[in-house]
Image 1 (tube, rainbow, N blue to C red):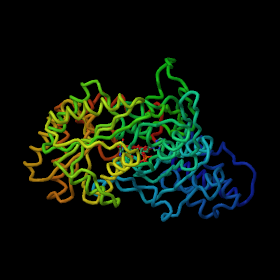
Image 2 (image 1 turned 180 degrees about the vertical axis):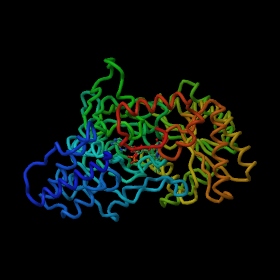
Image 3 (image 1 turned 45 degrees about the horizontal axis):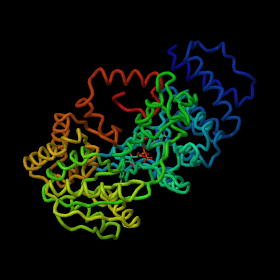
Image 4 (image 1 turned 180 degrees about the horizontal axis):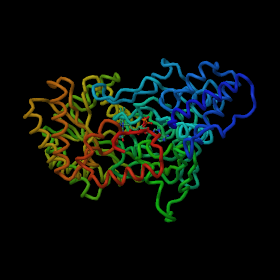
Length: 530
Ligand SMILES: Cc1cc2nc3c(=O)[nH]c(=O)nc-3n(C[C@H](O)[C@H](O)[C@H](O)COP(=O)(O)OP(=O)(O)OC[C@H]3O[C@@H](n4cnc5c(N)ncnc54)[C@H](O)[C@@H]3O)c2cc1C
């Protein structure tokens, strides 16, 4: 008898036993061995519990049980029923309408991966509950897709296979430790929550990715950057400790409220940027900074985009370290302002640099501002507007953060290439060449101080084949300049097919091996290349 047939028979047998209320299952009847036998016994035991509790009719149990081994999608129904016992009915959702809002992120629709049909949304309230979800999913080989705020731009959280969508939104507590300048945040708290909590304690959380609905777990899993990474760096620079649940259900505590920690391999760093493929982040210790007393934003318009971007390395070399150096096209930023009912304050030039400077002393900030304005002028800036009112500065950043939402419906893909900062001007020249070769407009915006540009390929290109070719050419141009295909959004499910441009076969092979160490059954956010 084949193992799967034996397993099915065993399950049928277990269920018949339930209806005739005979006592224990005679395990010696099964010819299965090793893992298969263990799994069969477990399935039989749990199917029996379900049937006894009247959660499923015996007929349904038999039907589900008989195909468990062959169809992961059906194992899902059993796991869902079992999870209701652990989390409570309310937190295990199978109704498609209620799940719909959890299965897509902000990836432009033309390139967005398709979500699977059979999904169960699970909302645990504690690390222990997350652990039980994963343990069960691992035993039944049911895929689990962790979702955060679904603000990702590469389809990373989209559940592409039948399985469990795991939302940590109920785990959203934040405690600020002023003494150590750190926050302990649960993974489901949002960026907005963390910024407010830090501010409430008179402290500052510098990273500012554009969507405040992103969650701590998602920000760490994608190693997010944002506009204020120039001076203090990306998420990796802030995370000091992590609590992670492995796909096997084991709980791992890494790091702590420490600024130095050299004990053993730094596994914590592996989870940062792992995009939900190695473990589920449940809690993090995050470094905060004192709030600077003075902050000034300078807007410099240019007629030439290469000129604007060539000013950036000069600013970085000057000894002034801005919090942010952003690059925008005037038409995009004006559209973003209109989109949120605002007016952009500078109407000159084709492109603009937005530079944020901060410090503890007025003279220091004033000097930095003067220095930056001189460099911009020397590179052809038409003007330099200084915004020093905090409310106005917040408004400027809010408009900047709305570019993507304003233009999203026209976009086929928004690329996230990064090059060494001094190569940005060259990247722009290459973009101009590609745009004229294909006869398209390639507007861009991005974190110029980090060498990170978001190039927009619009939906009005001739066909998706042509759009693919444009994307490939832009990637090739960035890589040729020593750059990469993603500076901050990550690989997700959208960039996977282009990874060969930046990672060697050996690199991917090592990643696959690491994946297997943490996730032997490949249940957590399964992606093709791992
Ligand atoms: C308008 C706009 C502006 C943006 N600006 C920036 C920017 O400036 N810089 C930047 O870096 N990004 C930016 N983004 C992208 C996005 O906000 C970030 O990638 C963010 O970090 C995603 O967080 P999230 O909670 O929304 O994660 P999701 O999109 O829900 O998920 C992202 C990935 O993280 C995984 N994940 C989520 N939670 C967990 C968890 N608890 N444990 C393990 N894995 C988990 C998911 O499986 C998925 O792979 C922007 C997006 C938008 C819409």
